[in-house]
Image 1 (cartoon, rainbow, N blue to C red):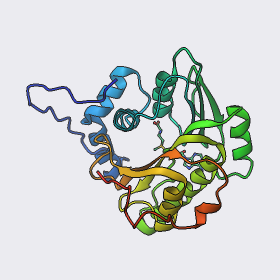
Image 2 (cartoon, rainbow, N blue to C red):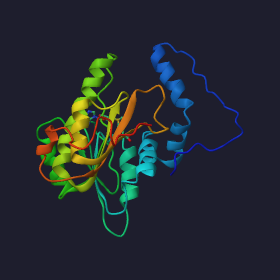
Image 3 (cartoon, rainbow, N blue to C red):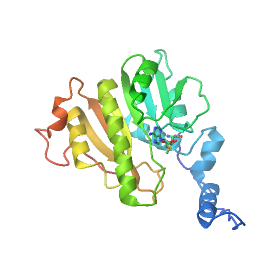
Length: 249
Ligand SMILES: C[S@@+](CC[C@H](N)C(=O)[O-])C[C@H]1O[C@@H](n2cnc3c(N)ncnc32)[C@H](O)[C@@H]1O
């Protein structure tokens, strides 16, 4: 599974969707975009549950955090594209584990433990820890609240989800572990970024090629969890000027 577009004749076939009674203009635009999106077609061809799967493929092909025997928490997992990729990439001689959670119901995926759970519910961390039954090597968060259409509200919501995911990652990650979360372009808020820089060896931002150019999403990837207690989390890093160790793409 590479997610790369195949070279072809260069001729683009475009499916046009007519407006229909009862269908809004935005639904018509969405349908047209889906029908003409090569990632949607490729996901269907490969039996992947979402085009989002290609974002994880591309991020992992670049940063190499998944691997046989790894233990993964996948937050905001429905419909399950990232979970499918995580399960495929942790398989090996040593048994990996994938715990996937979403507040929406999700069909089971062989090789993953799926929990229907609101991550912001106070009971969520304990329930995930129980399912994980040990430390995690990787905490992924593709969580996104439904877009409100008001950019500052959407930004606050997504940062709140990212912060909650980071709190949890700091509890369950093994030293050397990886935290990957969806943020909005413009990056991660300063305080959160400083916290990540204090607790991880490297912090980078990346927008994978399959993430739609028109979408404001991007991803923050923090690697090399330093472990231990998080006292340094509130302190700015001593050795790094602003932006150090951070890469955008
Ligand atoms: C972009 S989708 C994830 C797509 C998924 N990574 C895939 O590959 O199929 C974002 C998901 O985040 C979930 N989500 C948002 N807020 C959540 C919360 N508080 N707890 C659990 N899931 C949440 C949504 O229900 C939605 O399914």
